[in-house]
Length: 491
Image (cartoon, rainbow, N blue to C red; front, side, top):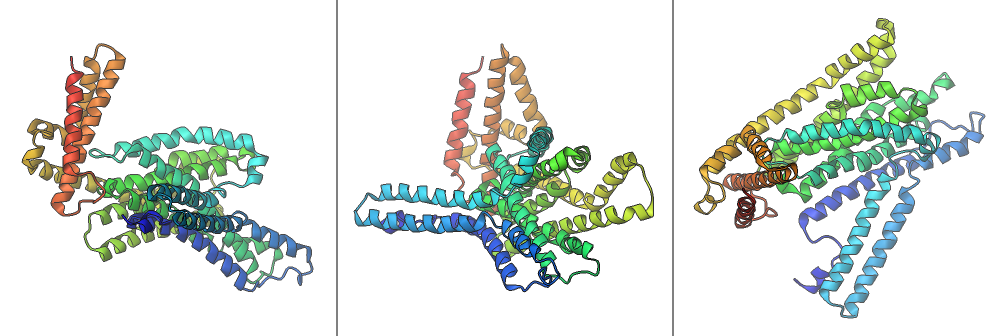
């Protein structure tokens, strides 16, 4: 490795650079909306309308959309300049290359952290938090158990090789913080833009309703873009864990659950929790596995399918179709729910109880049900594909791997029920609970290592092995080490 490579500020890996490009693209989208707002002449001149005081108010409210981005971008530029100057100075002083690399790595982490922090600061209005702090805290505590249960349920749908739990939590965190902040920025931009750049209606009291024009499409597109960007970054950085459509659905659903958690807390805490019960029922019970979970699960499924395609155009087309499906379904859901909420009282009258327990679930079933059915069918098809692929891989194991996975063990690996039974038997056979839990965990780690070895061999047979995945010799050594530990801890 040359000195120039050691002191490079950008990541050296191609996938890392692409992941950074995805993150920077979200900021470029925000900058584009700022430019559009500046160059488009306003159609509503509040000064000429006889209320000049509103000019300063409207300008102030418009600037609040980007209150953290402009100083944040200035900080990024200053930090990048300092990093460049520091690395040039270190090179001129003939500092050791490995030390310069450590310095460059720290600057990269600081730059990435700042890029992530800017949309994260937008997740909730400070005024709302100050006005109703107790309502937000209580809503979070109420919504957290249902979200974690849904996350556990999604994790358990993986019958064979599973996505690591830290990666699943990273997807949940991206959806809850970064995607929510980016989506809220775009929604606030549209509300400000639409009320200032469209002709004023005949009734001045209807001016605020202009923000609803196109809002379902704006929120559907940009919210799915923010969540999809997180799935794309995880796909680029941890591609070997996207082994099929199953893992893609799991990562996408986890991202959607994070978004749904923060959105639920926001709506439940509004106006000091005046409608918390309705939003909890609609977002954390009836629509928990639908809505954002279903939309982003489709995006994740597209990445999982693309993982098993060899042609780059096919991969890009598949991912684009998955995103467009999610965004369009999100838009249709928002538009129809808004329309029915405004017009349903003209069609029939229903009590509040009937509306909450019957009408609301029926709307979810009608507008979100097709996406739920789609990702469940994709999940079912992916599990069947995994089972068939692992069966072929275990049948065609190289001789060196026969000791790591014997024929009886291969039969157990193909049956989730038998794997679970073995772990329960190990738990019950121990002399006490502590030893039983330890035996259960050791057997679970052995099965996971064997499934990883078999899955990577399956990808190798298909010609889609990932360069970042551990080689077969390392995987075999890990399995043998776990077997040794398991044998040494036996009775």
